[in-house]
Image 1 (cartoon, rainbow, N blue to C red):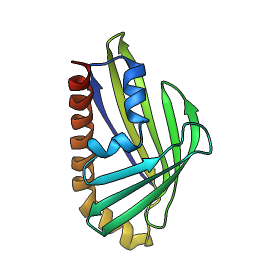
Image 2: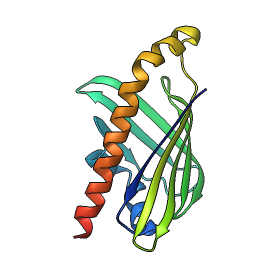
Image 3: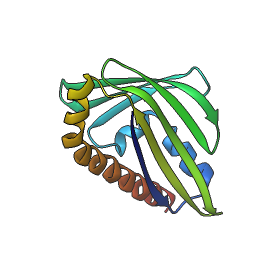
Amino acid sequence: MEHLELEVTVNAPAQTVWDEITNWVGQSQWMLGTKVSGTGNAIGGTIEAFTGIGRIGFLDTMEITRWDPPLRCDVLHTGRVVKGTGSFQVEVITPTTSKFIWIEDLDLPLGIVGKIGFKFVKPFFVFGVQKSLNKFANFVHLKLK
């Protein structure tokens, strides 16, 4: 398993942050190179995220395994490429400021080849997710203005 944990401070109340991160289709506006669909808002709900350019990329299918609004949503990655678990967590800092934490525990494909390959891909993956989280924080801040 490869553990990744990234976060961003958002100038918005926890409920607002929750509403935006669980607006699955809306994630396409701030998640780098990804188009998201789904209507899951309870345990057993499903989400799909296609990451790529045009038709080149991969589909990440997920099932919601924990739903604790407005603080936590856990998913099980069920696709061919992405396996493991993920978590969207919101922590209250103040009544008007929150922290959005993105956690992934990925089961890398292809055994040792996948582990070695991920060492090269990981910095780009982390950069892309952090850029997306920063874009999210700005997106929510501008939406509240």
